[in-house]
Image 1 (cartoon, one colour):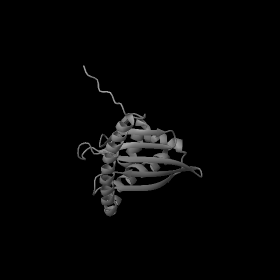
Image 2 (tube, one colour):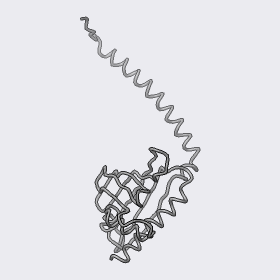
Image 3 (spheres, rainbow, N blue to C red):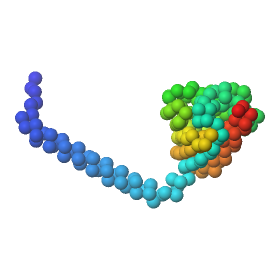
Image 4 (cartoon, helix red, strand yellow):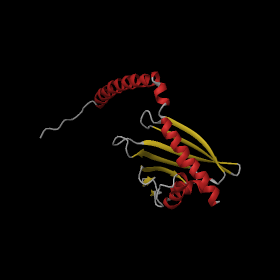
Amino acid sequence: MKRFVIKKPSVFATFCAMIFMFHYSIAQVKKENNMSEHVTNADSLKGITIHQEIYFSVAPKLLYEVLLSSKQFSECTKKSFNMFTATSAQIDPVPGGVFAVFDGHIIGRVLELIPDQRIVEAWRVVDWPAGVYSIARFEFKTQSSGTQLIFDHIGFPDGLKEHLTIGWQQHYWDALAKYFSVNN
């Protein structure tokens, strides 16, 4: 068996580096072309982002716990619409855990948890095209005697911004406010 021995490693290393740089520069050109397309379509990008800031008169810990508790979120859900069952939320509150809320209408996976500070979820409505997930990010900031919730929802299908904005308000923020007014 004949072995290939590189007698001049610096020549070989230079050759490999040149190949790498060639492929890297082509990838950068493709990336720049794609980025310029995104910049020119900035208006369409705005259509797939929701940013909301909501004040709750409870500590971040309480808000965080309700959003991750199957029992408490199910009780909260009943505050938005009576049609949801008493067990409408099934939440595995660990990174990587799955959830289904509103009797399975919304499903997803918990991506990140920082206790009492942040929840990040891969989030989808069950009738969206297969494999399409958006990202919902809940950030909790102590403010006065309560919590400023900074919420960002990105990456959902075009044309749904208004519907989802209303849904977040009615089914999450209004329901949470009612829940805390009764349970606090």
